Length: 267
Image (cartoon, rainbow, N blue to C red):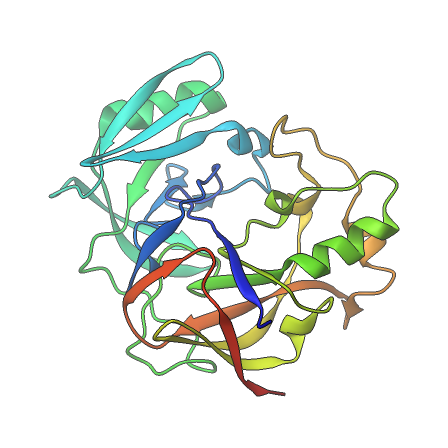
């Protein structure tokens, strides 16, 4: 039996909780709506779970034509899923400057109250340009507000291997993948160069270096030491803890859980 695409995960607001559809559209930047929204401080710098672990408790869902945000002790708020304008603002994600919009002052007030700090909810319009690192992709390839690549791929076997080493197992949401693959050996994704799901090809271009977000319980926002402490004992390379592979797709289309994953080329 070939490996299978076990689950899909979409995160409309960078750093917030995502959702796991049975199938989802893929556009030029990755999963449709994935990280097209991002929190920013008054200077336009992005805010993530790294400094605000309570972002894990913000839940997102799509009820077209709206993005719905929910958070503890806050009323739900609905944002236009595809705003037609807003206050223009140059925002920064990992030092990259991107043209964005702040389209909804009520959303800004909502998230500022929740986090008890001034911040805004920025949207990446279709016209905004954020190229993928040219070391890994053609210069015309664009990405959303992700950390750098359209997809993060992790095999279920890799998590199972890690959990066998931990005193308490952890769920996959600690690693915030887009694509979870079943039916492989542990860390098989490290050996893959190109894979195919349906008519979409993905090139796995770079291991994912993990940060403190993986130590944040996505259900409580509590922060601990695992899994970084254990991963560092066997997944550390050049001072970075690696888990999962960043990937770039070659076309638009649709992916669905249960699809076969064909390995086209290994390293």
